[in-house]
Length: 291
Image: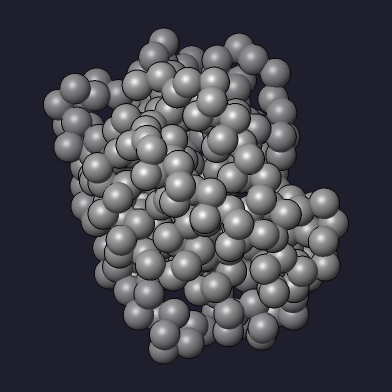
């Protein structure tokens, strides 16, 4: 269902208020819009606002109903909806499906796939093309996509969290950068200390979509059955994956090391709090063998 010009303008106004940290006004305008229109554009904003409000179950239920009808659903939306689909980079000529997960070597592999497609690599800017990744149902991997090489890289939750904090928040100042350099956004510092970030991870995930995309459990992106994929590996298996992609495409491909964390220490604390261990329990249960 195509949105009218009025609906597009109204949605833009709602988002503008949200980013200006005028949430009450944004929510009131959205509620008014929802009374007049059932358009998925407004229901999608409603799901985002429910996440912001901490009502994740309600947001998930809403997304289940609309995620297949919205334009270019985000990875976090598919993950939260839990409808058995993930976003993949699809190369039909080489019959490859790669399911990228942030902080799991996705930048490197996506740039390798650019070479396979005969296109220029984009380094870290490759994620500006995330909207081109398409939803794929996991149940279709053994049927409709049986001839495709379906693959993903995974990583332990503690290592992912640390990498996101050091590489994206500290080194690249992304939280502030996404909000015009603001020192705070809805009461959360955009340049937090590690302990503060970890203690307030739930709230960071509610307020910042980028934090959610980088810290969402692997099992939410890939489901809980690694056997439906042709290949799953950990970060240490990146060279193997590149070799398999090269063999499939007939190319001699380099092993890239994109998004390396500047100043990365030799040793890192890989211990999760009890609360976070529970949150990432399915990652450890279904994908721990690959970490």
